[in-house]
Every structure is written in C-alpha cells, then in structure tokens.
Image (tube, rainbow, N blue to C red; front, side):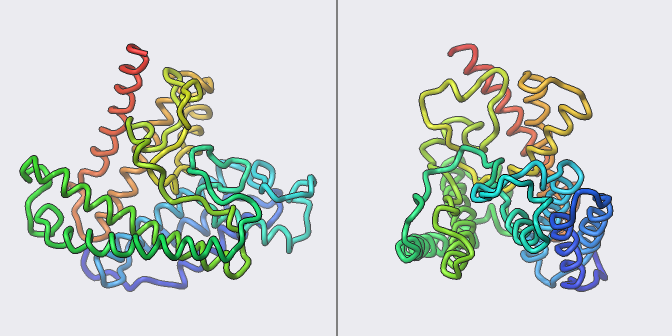
Length: 339
C-alpha cells in the first residue's frame, strides 16, 4: 500500500453528483451510465490515502457503502416509481413533477439510508417524536442526550486506547483472559454506538434547526439493548420462513443501527428472486438474503481494513459475519423446534 495518491475531493463530488442526478432525471435515461459515474470514482478513491489510517478506514468503508447504495438506487430499482415519501401529498408520480421538485425529492432520498419517512421504511425502530413536536424541545432533548453520550464515549475511548486487545501491537481478542472479554466488548460497543449517536444527533439538530426536516423525521440511531435476546433481533434481520416475528407479542424492534439495511436487503432480494428465482417468503429465499447481507457486510469491513493497511489475510471480518449468519440460522431452528 505504498505510494498512494492523496484523497481527491473532486472524485468524491463526481460520485455524489452522478448518484444525485440519477434520482432527478426521468427513468427514460439509460441508468447504468450514472452507476459508472458513481462507482468508478469510488473505486479510484479506494486507492488513495488521507494520511491517517483511521480516516482511510472510515473513507474506504463509506466508498463501498456508496457503491452498494448506487447499485440499489440505480441498477436494482426505479426509485421514482418504487419509492414514495410519506409527505408526498400529490398522488402524481414524482417522475412527472417539475425538475425542481424532483431535485428536492432526489436529495432527500439519497440522504435517507434507513428509509425513514419513505414507503420502504422498516418497522423496527424505537418510537420517535410525534408529529407537531416543537423543534426547540427536540433540539434540547438531543443536546442533553449527546452530552451524556460524549462523556461515555470519552471514557470508553480512553479504555480502548490502552486495552491490549485493541492496540496495533497488542494481543488478539482471543488471547485475552475470559473475564476481561465482556469488559473489553462493553467499552468497545459503547465507543462505537456512542460515536454513531453523536454524529447522527448532530446532523439531526442541524437539519431540524435549519427547517430542512421535522423532529418526527428522526428516529433513534440504535434500538433498546433489552431487545437483544436473539442474534436476529440484535442485528435487525428480516423474519425467516421458519420464524415469523410478526407472530410474537413483543414489539418487532431491532438493536443495531440499520443504516445499511436498505441496500443489503435490496441485493439479497435480487440474488434470491432474480438470480436464483426463489419464491418470496420461502426458507430458501430468506436464508439466501440473510447470507448475502452478512457476506456484503464482511466485504465492506474487509476492504476498509485493507485500505487502512491491514493485509487481506489478516482480516477476519468475512469469517465473523458468516458466523453471525450461521448463528442466526441455527437459532431459528432451535426456536422453531422448541416453540
């Protein structure tokens, strides 16, 4: 990974412009052109460096996310016909609206990774602000919550920075004494969740303060940890053919953030239904979607780790996520057998 060129903001702008334009122009324009314009700059950016291993990791992860998002919104779907915003009062398809309205619609869609407020919004989030909630109340609540999270993140980061399992020249997590492993994971998860909460909270405050969105447009970054009593509920996977969570009396909430759910689900459905021609709702279709989602998750982390300086063979990301998918499949079988 030597002699890498510097990160190019221009290339990033080209990718963003291509994706946004694909959501504004009418579907009659050949859409694969926009995918090339979105994906090629991102692939190039994976060969560049910001000069920081941490930032390189984050940027590489974001580039793979961007490519998969572009694939979902450009190649696998026709958003102007498939997606509808909740406050899109005009029943006329957005593709027939003036270009100004389509531009606003496209920008809103491209910035909504989880589909909150859209026709494809998953019903797995914690309750959020009700319509009519004052903007000031929402902002004050977010500021107080973020202040508490900032303290937690700072404490967790200090622990992680000195923990041998997380230092570059330290020991592997598997070599840590069993009684330290839960402690290590608690602080690591606090740091990861807290950073995501702080970023998400800052964006929500800015958006609501500038009247770009309403308080009810923002749901919590993560679910309740009390709902993490199965792997499936922790990760936020859709119900399988064996176990339909709609039959449960408990709320169908999920714990992990769901920021990647949209394009992971889209590629899983494409593989199961279009490539393998499996019937929707069957066990085969559900588990193909499950494994596609986790394999893609592993690849995203693998590419980010490699870009940050870790060799391909040193990464265990794909293995880790495959184990999660297999654990969910096994878990479903056990629950179905005893339930």
